[in-house]
Length: 235
Image (cartoon, rainbow, N blue to C red):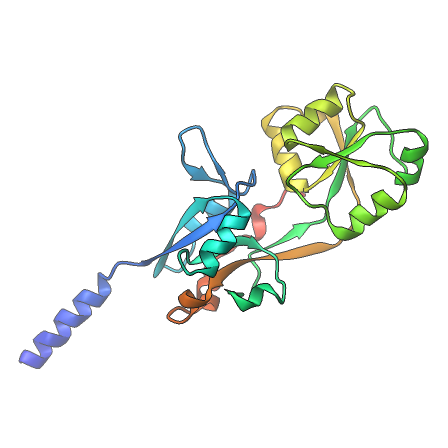
């Protein structure tokens, strides 16, 4: 009888066990992760984590600069980081699951609908001004195509500023991440002013990567199976 009672107590305890909270570091990248006017961390990635079907885990996203985020996860003070591109060097201190969190589309070019674009070489001949966000690195192949034409890439504070500069004819083209650009344009009610030109069909996998300490006691592939971030992109 005592044995049966003991089993019931253990079962009851397990069934009410609190889920493990995974701390996730991320840079502020609108619309994926950002701090809203109420000082809450929100965004498409945050929504994806919060909608996980794996009820053994919850997520707490912490916004911080990318360099600091890497250090925090490397030193096991934070459990995970997003969005992380896979590199062999990072595997020394990050563990990557089998499934990426998302496949980012390649950079796009934005122009006013009244303007034209045929090639970067033609843009150089016409003395066009082209820009990107200062903190955002372009894909290597896109950057090489722009620079090989002889164009100088200007650095702008943020996406919203760049779109306003196109609207005001202060720059001609802006190149960057399609999601950041399209969401910002929609939010600012400027979407109808621009044309968006795809520069490549390539996509880049990006991961929710975990600290070495965290993976010792947690199955990160099972965690990822509970996430579905495929529907975050605007075509």
